[in-house]
Image (cartoon, rainbow, N blue to C red; front, side, top):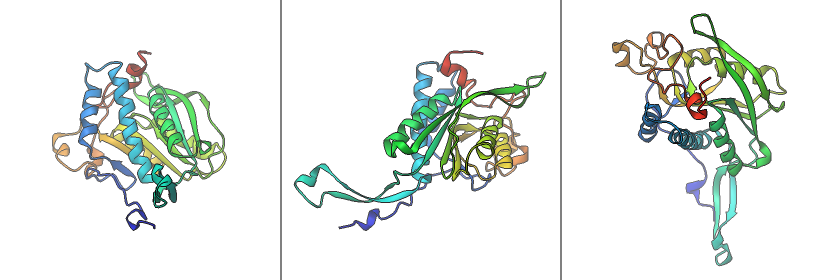
Length: 271
């Protein structure tokens, strides 16, 4: 018999209150906040930093996939089926035929994308899962202010029609890289994606403003909003209430409080 308790899933992750709009999901997760504090500490280097990034993305990816991926009815016999014909799970699961692309943006996004890719291959039909790779860096002006993102190379499958695109990139700072990647996937490849979802450890108000202005359809998940350079009275209000006064980037477009150069520390490479 079918158990009505598993006829559908209403899963939604807990979120902090904010005013950035329905496309933004800021998770209420004290365990993740604890690990993010460890990640940003000056004492945290490899191998711990790499372990924290991978673990946080395994957690974040599970939340996002459980919330955003289509579901389907399944009938899966268990090991007890040999002795009991009723030993069959009949209920909802993620639809294995869902076509998904995870986009690895080097350098900081390489490990997160690999984590997401491996999880997708476990949960879905591997024939429906793809990993793309982008190589880009910040473009800055004479005083070090970020002006955009410069592409160096890419390995991308051309077909995106009907696919869910995932962009797991730890630090949502200025939004230049994600905005550039989203524009490319929407305008330069074959077909229209079903949905574009960005997965971040930390984001700034400036990031959200830019990405949502250029791509109002993108869905953003983050474990923390960093607006540490905002006036004290603004920090006492619900995030997004005074969005125009919020500030999370210093004069060189690094996140405050942030975690420093995560891509550099992940790779022990300081260029």
